[in-house]
Image (cartoon, rainbow, N blue to C red; front, side, top):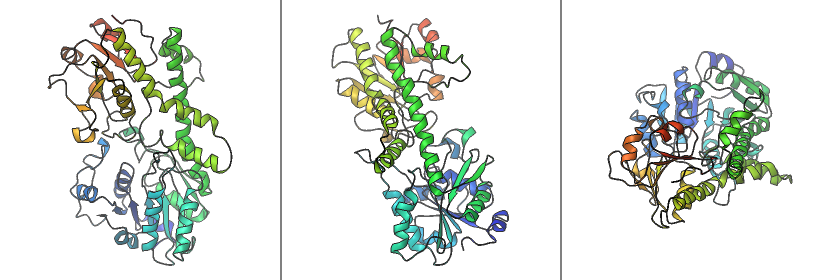
Length: 453
């Protein structure tokens, strides 16, 4: 098993087996994608719940794009297990798609990468040249720093017993236009021959460009800076959304005007940045910069702006309530959405949580309506409601997540359940003029507070 001179031919014949370690938002669509491309797939996840769901053809993730696509457990090309040692001997290529979160003190947590590597290396056959590809987002150098020592402990040699490579995942959960089969990929590997063969393999997964970029560290760095760049761009408009209202300007009016220039890149402010990438990955780059003694001042400043955006919005909402003569300790806020992104039931790193905590620290009650999440998905300190069916009285509704259900909302029905028809657009996606014409008092991130009654 593993890489040899006939690997390219085996790829074309779909006669290789591909293992996926970690069957979450990245791993499961990747496994399904390679299965659909004709390969034999071995999927591994330590969660018995996840494995039992997949084997029952049920979706364990909140990504609607996976619904109805999970193969039947009886198919000989589809094998799902909780045991890495069961899967690895059957596989020529192992893809590791485990989480790379941060710790409470905002440092990279590489324990999932390390543990997954150890499990794979414990099961690898000596001399097999099994290809092990890390897809998780890391800073440049992690693959070598984390996995080479583990190989050495086991008497394994890169290039003999395994072939290490890196190919960052890039797809966007819940986005059918940028799924795992529609995004470009890059491959880094110390062996160009192995790297080019991985390019041939990934070309069966995606319709977009796949290219070998040389060193593993190049591919690692390319992924982390993609999200760093987005964090910086979002931080700029979020900072402008704080400044311009103080100048009696709506940030969206300014952005509309600036967008008339051909090379202006438009971003939209929001209540905060969520998910498992943008709020996390900059800390990986900041750590690596610190390791080599170079200050990451711009990255650090951008992260601080986006991280504190929920506190800023909480201050604005408190001011709105105060100017509407709502006594301290009696304000009630309804969150429209909790998930970090539209159309997906994923609460990881959602800015809704720090915003809710900031409001509650001001003695403001928070309830949440998110059609993509159940009560069990929300923290205990907020109340799960559906105001269309439950008796509910809120002083203001705050759009947190631009779910389609909210963009097409029956606003009159919602207004009938509230103490007053007030809405704060935390994503700048609502038709505020239309809402105002139907009696709503409208507010938004980056907008001056002009029309309080």
